[in-house]
Amino acid sequence: MVFASPRAYMLLSTAAAVATIVLKTLAWRLTGSVGLLSDAMESGVNLVAALGAFWALTLAAKPADRSHPYGHFKAEYFSSGLESVLIVVAALAIMHTAIGRLQQPQPLEQLGIGLVISLLATALNGLVAWVLLKASRRFDSITLRADAHHLLTDVWTSMGVVLGIGLVKLTGLTILDPLIAIAVALNIVVTGWKLLHETASGLLDRSLPDAEQQVLEDLLATCATDEIQFHALRTRVAGSRRFVSFHVLVPGRWSVQAGHDLCEQLEQKVASALTRTHVFTHLEPIEDPKAWEDQGFRWEQG
Image (cartoon, rainbow, N blue to C red):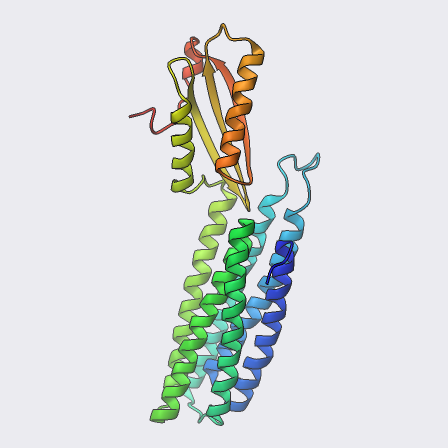
């Protein structure tokens, strides 16, 4: 399944969320299982997150303008921030319901058909998550990647709930149902915390991952000579885009055209090595002591 834009994949995620909510709610109504209720509530979080992600991707796709000269790419972090909050709220609601069921245990009904319906919803989530993961690599989209991993978390959560319901059916110990619901809630909290941390890191202009940073440093190291040096490398990530800047030091006797041509070549090499990267260079005379005041490469520091 291949679509032309990330937003189309979020519509797919939205449709899957609606379908799984219907299926899991039906399973809960048939069985009375608080574990299945918690699973249905998490799918509700998936739906809101998918809608938020669609809005964020729409905003991120807008071109740069006078008010936002660097583009709107950071809009993707709004959806992950919203998703983080919703995840924690859902977890608290699940815990509240499960604790009440612990205090007043209730027998479960029609477990067989309930398990079948829940497994069907889980399979749907797993398929959509796989599609989104492939798309996230194609578009290099943190929003698609986050939504895919959230769906995978939902898959494992659902498998845990199904296992718990199966154990209740085999053992007759109804207390297992709310206990597993609490475990599900704790798992959701962990997911929410990780997403919140990633969102905060992105909003604070985190640098490129170490592997990509090393690619940049190695590339520039191969271009360095006695007359051509680099420093002040700075990188940041904004949604699916990367921003890279560095200083290029050349002999002062070079013409402006020669320095400009070198910078153009370097920018093209960086952009080819790392897709969706905006590159900015600053040309300086290598003989000027002030040009060396702004250092930045680990390999320059030994």
